[in-house]
Image (tube, rainbow, N blue to C red; front, side, top):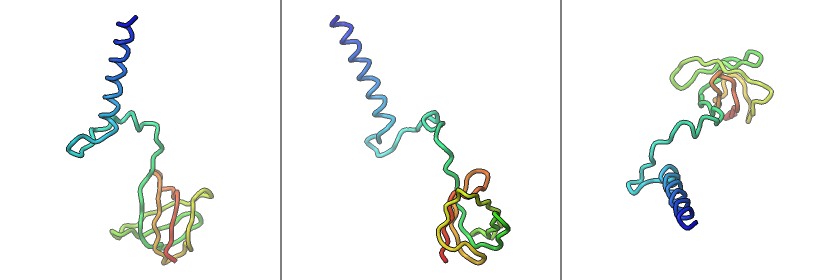
Length: 108
């Protein structure tokens, strides 16, 4: 019985040290690489688009981004809108991988 308990405590300490190594920084301040399977069930956060609204066409926005490229964004009923979103406004939009706006913040 003592051998079984000793063996179980040894296995537990190994698993805890592995979890500690994954979650915390080492002495040099560097985090170990994270296995992708830890994040495979996480929803996609998307990207941020900043620029000026050139045109509004129904639920679509045509934006001139900071590089001068035109980007078309789609708004839905679930899109969080802060400020007046109109032509000429400077906006910051968080969009998903299909360019649907999750949130839009206007400076006007």
